[in-house]
Length: 393
Image (cartoon, rainbow, N blue to C red; front, side, top):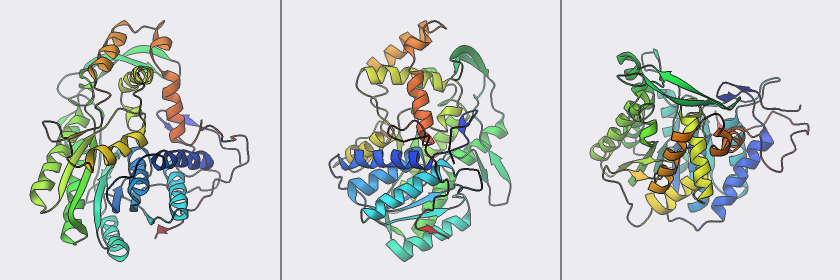
């Protein structure tokens, strides 16, 4: 079949297997061309199929020859429906890793569930014995709690409404949007989904079961961003969850002997999560423009290689005053942020095409799903059915 992108809202409902494969290959080639890292040898990535989670798995495997177990929650192809991009990404990663002599095993299911946690523990015991690094990279919209109730996260402000510029990326039209504040219950539910509770559950179980190596490290991902985005992110409902995540890193370090918990504050990038946040896509399109002009732009794989090589496994990890690793250091440079502030203040309908890198935003968006990848023939007949080689059942 000929597979074309079908966009609905901020997601693409189709994915291209060959495009995803080539996107994974490009990330692997990037890491292969970089110096090796004296990093982890046995890695568990919780949320491993797209974005920062996928890049974490690739970076660990190819910068320090790590054996990796990935937890995903993705769908295979069914009839005329393609598989999810995460399914194709994982299938491609395993094919490349196995070809290159690297251990790679994948579990597909709900990472929040006790069943998936138990299955993961058994796989580690069976194949790796212990893990040196646990990457927690979940960005789920909802969670089924142990009692069976389902809670959902929301992208809202806290306390007061917030009004600012936003952009319709399809029409490229600027407008104003007002975001209403979350209720107390919505904030609590967002923390349950996106906070540190599940991360702590994972680490407590892994420690109790003896599958964490001595001096094991765990890292979860967050974002801070400029003052411009704080009402929607840092000070909003999602920011409340990220504060809980930050507190959890400290609880892990203090409560699990020999384990160090870190938060890595990463750069703003086009991901399925960021695409859903009002105002943020406009900011990202300006950020891309400025960082590309200054030769500072990075994608997920550049960020994750730098996390392992320059930050997490350097001789002495450099932390900010709050004890966090800062991969947003280039984004937050004064010369970058001052230029974005200037552009934001003058942004209008006539100037948006010149000031914002909307084409770059769309390119990254489509590439998440395996489209717009150079060298891929999208007019060619394509079989949507792809197997993940060692998917554990």
